[in-house]
Image (cartoon, rainbow, N blue to C red; front, top):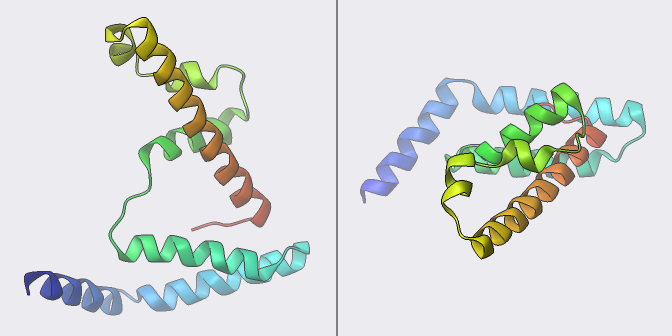
Length: 127
């Protein structure tokens, strides 16, 4: 029962803060921008829907993705991205096998974040 009350308060707060008006305005701006650049409006809108849903659920943007995004926005694709993203304190405590596994996992996460960043850049999404 308490969960329902929390969700209701959050919904009321979104209404008070003009969340939906701003959201609709953002949708239209991004869709019009995509149309002008010759990009599918449907792709842009579906991508934005996912962001809105995660924001409503209270999910925060992935910290790892934000680090990758900052590197890509400031310096572009760099050859030592994995090294920059490595947690040195944690890395030094790991055994050889664990270090290999950590590096592989970090690489996979970086590639996923890079693909997301490219998709957002291609669609021109700002939110």
